[in-house]
Image 1: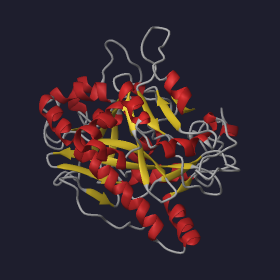
Image 2: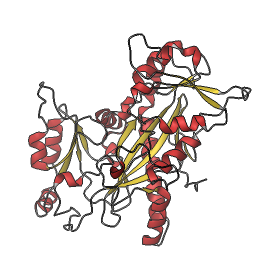
Image 3: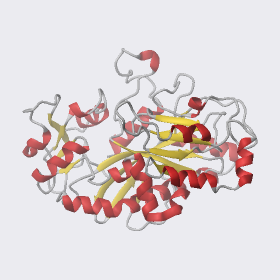
Image 4: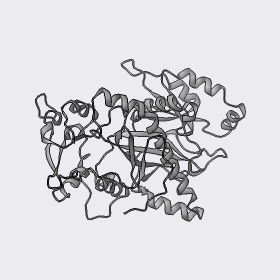
Length: 409
């Protein structure tokens, strides 16, 4: 079992349990002899994205069984929400999960938390934090504005920044950088641009006339580096109830690295990189050159380089606080949506993947909360077309951490 990290005080009614998540494969009290029946809507996921869940069911020694699955989306296919008598746990996407709620009986669970899109949509995450905490939201996440609604709020904020700060940025290429986000997934639709270019592109439209970008967010310039490489920290959380609101933080995570930086100006910004090189993206990362690290390795690295556990404790404590505040901000929406869908206590749960960027002062900045995190194993680029990785080979950190996550559920 992985070492437990230090706990922080509870925030509002949010419980961040700094250990393994509550087990979804355990039979409820008095039902030890009955296996937990899973139904998976396989068609709703990309290829391989339920692999680890399936493997865990198979390895449960009969405590869980795959009772059914929907492999194709057809008009009259027996989707899980039409076969509610056949399962105890329904693993699907939000669209089909909410349809199932009207058919569910006490004791059944479905893998969505109604209303959690108030955090998992990039633009709504910012709106939720700002509505609850005002400008204090930007102690949790970098300064951000929804597009196109807050375009001129953003422009006014830029105009009101101290002239000295603007001048300092002007002396060091590439100057103030902003991230434009399109609402896409898996690292697509993210663009890092110098301020002037971001302003010019922020209101661009698609070929069909819709606004292309949904959010503009300040780029974290003074990022913490490992061997000159920037990174983001991925952690996982499991939300299991809304009244009281309970969320569990998995005792692990991974660091995903970007391209190495060779030189930086005095402002902490790279002076020799193209804007697209500033994006750290798992889906385009060169993992042959720089494999992801697990959290334990990162903790050991910080201990060795700083001579103290304080740096890692600050990072992990900041992760806990950011997640606590985010879930607390979402609580009113979660409770309202649970009432709307008539979801009973404990009827729903949702696993989310949460991404942070850590700055040079070891402050973790909340970047995204992602719904439906992949439960697939990763295959390195050179192994494309060979299927899944050899189980006997040493597991990449991402796979090992996700396996530990699922096995602890």
